[in-house]
Length: 342
Image (cartoon, rainbow, N blue to C red; front, side, top):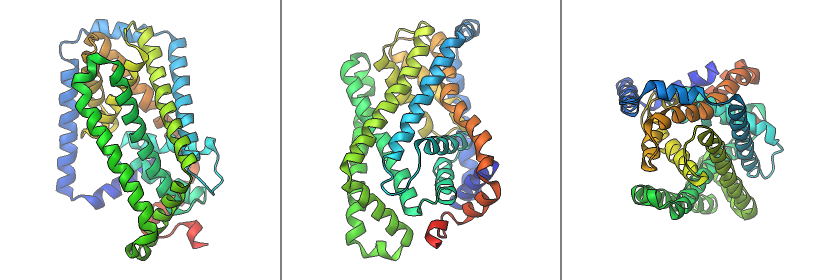
């Protein structure tokens, strides 16, 4: 895990100057501390801690189990995008959680993809173009799934429609832009001479074009993405019911989706500390949930979503081969993968 953290920080250093990096860290710290303070201001800590400490262990275990099922479905949707390579759902489940765990510890948004890309190309022999294409496509699937869920949820949750409609519209517009981008990359693999001069970009575009031909796989992957997010919402709904928070499954799903999207988009300290709680408390306030329940609920959901991948990264990343990963990480973005060298 330390190697992946070091590589992510190296990439970050290469992309920004020292002064700009310092400003970014400072802004993230200010945002996290400031928003965290706003979220907890006026909080009755005794009542909040009682609500959090009163969660029965069976409920916690069930919520964690449902969370892992959601992640397993996410791995399955990723597996659907591999058209030629043989790689198991269990292996992708591990790789995805390792990458997410590293990402949760760093203020570098590409740490997850950098780690997953390196493991796929080095340890699993996946071509660099396919690795990049599948990683990019699952992010696109997430955005499409989130946009659809957000739009459908707002149709049934009129109390939030007015305040969240603009965000739903923006998300839908972004999804359409991504759809156009996928079509452009697919077309460019055949019609743009520039791509043929850049081997990595050319293989990436060719992989996207191959995926586009298998629309059945794309539709199935999108359906699995939708299912994964709904199952994640179910995990949060189980906890909400146990804490006496009167939200429906659709409302909990909307709360979690909105929180993850905005909390990870705002500059913050590693792990979205403070920003996650602030966004969730705000969105739950739209539904009339008291802050003394919303804040401890946000703390629990934050831990539920962020801690398991961190623990998995700490346990399993060293087993991927630290020395080999160090050499591959230095070549991942400039050289050729072991598969392409063969």
